[in-house]
Amino acid sequence: MAQLVGGFAVSHTPTIAFAQDAGKQDDPVWKPIFEGFEPVKKWLAETKPDVIIYVYNDHMTSFWMRHYSHFAIGIGEEYAAADEGGGPRKIPPIKGDPQLAEHLAFGMVADDFDLSYWQGMGLDHGAFSPLSVLLPHSDEEGWPCRIVPLQCGVLELPIPKARRFWNFGRSLRRAIQNYPADIKVAIAGTGGLSHQVHGERCGFNNVEWDHEFMDRLAHDPESLIDIPVGELVKLGGMEGAEIVMWMLMRGALAPKVNELHRSFFLPSMTSIASMVFEDAEPDPSPETKEEYAERIYADVAPALGLEGTYPFTVTRSAKAWRINNFLHSIVEPDFREGFKTDFEALAEEYALTEEEKTMIRDLDWIGMIHYGVIFFNLEKLAPVVGLGNIDVYAAMKGMSVEDFQKTRNAAINYSVEAEPAQ
Ligand code: FE2
Image (cartoon, rainbow, N blue to C red):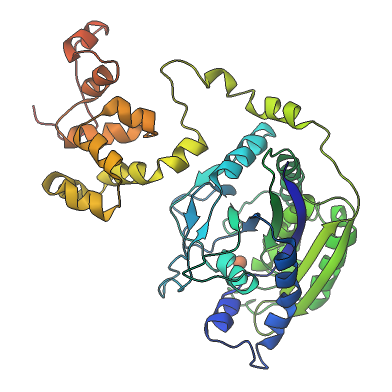
């Protein structure tokens, strides 16, 4: 069974990444950041979590207005540093944990939290600014643990109430406790504390509130969770409302915790703080792991194992990300043209495996479904190779097009191509 070893809260700001990358560790102006983080670093080195569930928000880098969701769980195999406008930081990608992500996804959805799932996008300073200080890393060795990033969309209002973040944390605790693998899990809440980076109020800080918040978070967290988000903005600045993610982390811990560490430093715009907690009392899951598993899979279970049916689960999505991403790129005109003129070069560029290349070359439609390609990417491939949807359906069933058409009310064929050849 998984063990929740504790949680930590930490501010995230580009300042931290800048100080780290510019080698300011011993510069008196920057040193307090590193000194404040040192006990967190030591705690992580001693507790050695296998996975950190990393609650953070992206800053309109990988997640922005095209599609903005509130609770987005990373299901990918690995995460690289995002390009935030000045090129990505030179740090190695960190491994993800798709299996744990799937378990958490089933657990949270069963508890009525509406999640979104993502992969193939970079982590911005919301994740890597503290992580790169807290964990050792190198191109050769990588990172000492995996992460499951939970991106919280807190920048485009309205956002969920603080209580919703807290409840999310409570549910997440049960999901972690009932994860069958024998691993150590830590949870991180990031963001804040008080700061505002836009408008005439930019530069706002409220140190008194920051300290009160940390006190209450440690010892009376439920006194915080009914504060309206707008009130949190008044108290801690517009972007300081990110502290709802600290509440989520705290919700995942026992009601009583030991506060092992606290640091606070306000160098410029953002109060940079850190805290470490461990449970001070048992707070076990009310369900056995068997009961929990039965409950969280109950809704989907009837479709699992159904003959000729391949539910596109989080695990399938993560496993077949590379080929799905390749086929989805057909929506881009340049890629589409490249596919038609030099498939081999494009397949090489996208690092497809030989198995994946062969399935596409052979138009092995059912093979691709078995492998984990979602049908709607096959539907994009069909017109590029001059076929229609009916050709794909017939092939998946091992029938001729003519025979398949006889099973329909009309003998037609069609595709998603905008201007199909007549
Ligand atoms: Fe932030």
